[in-house]
Image 1 (tube, rainbow, N blue to C red):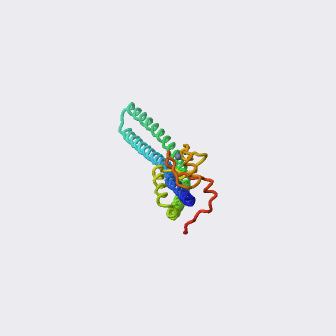
Image 2 (image 1 turned 180 degrees about the horizontal axis):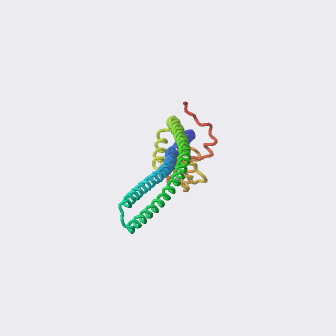
Image 3 (image 1 turned 90 degrees about the vertical axis):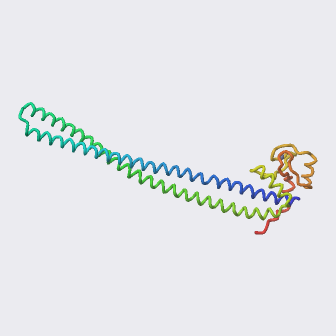
Amino acid sequence: MKTQIKNLLELQNIDLQIESLLLKEKEIPKQKEKLRIQEKKLRQEIEDSEKHHKKLVLDQRECERQIAQLQEQIKKYNNQLQAVKKNEEYQALLREIDEVKKQIGLKEEEQIKIMLEMDEANLFFLEAKKRIETEIQQLKKQEEQIDKELQEVIQERKGLEQKKLDFQRLVSVELLNHYLRVKQRRKTGPVVVPLRDEICSGCFMQILPQVVNEIMASEKIHTCRHCGRILYYADLIDAQETVIVPKD
Ligand SMILES: [Zn+2]
């Protein structure tokens, strides 16, 4: 019976390791999700910067178009000047021309401002692009590392699953079925637990003295009537000879 419990504990140990590895397998891809969000933000930064630059180009073109239009207007007025006879009309036209020239001056100032801004935006864009590309490369490396880690965890789990099959063969069918039943019900955590001062260390409920005696004598496999976990007497197991290790 002691050997049975020992083997079952080994099996449980493997199961708990598998459980924690499965948890890791679920958690690891979430890290990648975080990296993807970071990458998306960085790409958005480039995109925004490009958009800003494109807007400035359009603004600049619009300025150019307006200036050309105003210059066209001046040409028209100049032509009209040739045909004008009255001095008043002549003066009025000259004032119009002055007004348009002022407008051109303002537009040209605006254009210079836009061009300076474009230079700045261009510089910013190039720097940002360089920085972001490096950052994205680093993210990709991290992603590869995560993939590698995940593969290692999966490999380790598969190895344990193989080992688990070997240990299952060393436990009696009855005990194994009981173990599997409780395990299925409890989903996580240990199913085989030590008795501690007449208390089940799984649910911390008192165990009947008669049952305690039987467990200590290692006569029968007992389960906790409160939580259903399989109980064993730790001192007895520790004093026992080494576990039978299944062949590879
Ligand atoms: Zn219990």
